[in-house]
Amino acid sequence: MKNIKILWLGLLVLGFLGCVCSVAQAMDEAQVEKSFVEFQKDWIKKLNTEGKYGQKGMRVEKSSVDGSFTAKYDEVREAAGSRIKKTGNAATPYVGTMHYEIYGCTAAGKTAEEAKRGPFKCALQTDTNEIFRFNGTKWLY
Image (cartoon, rainbow, N blue to C red; front, top):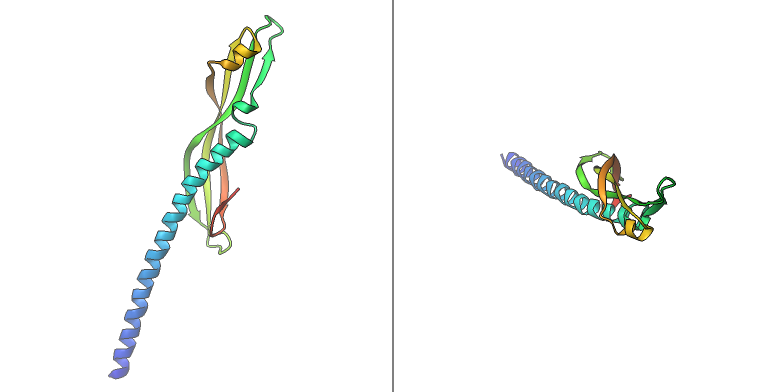
């Protein structure tokens, strides 16, 4: 009888620990998802400031027909959607997919400086999907 009570107590403790671990794991997943949202914002900003995108990558072309100027640059807009997925791999427990759009922006003017000032009209050029991995502590490019 004493052994049965100990067995039941042991099973009860294991069941309780299992529930606590599940709650902790769910909180971790929520934190991973929240960190991916922040990572996306940083990634879009990085693309526009350090990559070929954004106004710093502006090009100006002169028309051979009428001598007018056209200023052009490409811009990455905020993530249009995303999702994370468990992998079952300890080294990379999650992967995240980010969907964003790249817009081509143009403005015309009589001089290069006038074209650079705008106003710019932007149109969707490309839909892009990228996959990133989570190493257990942070998202990696």
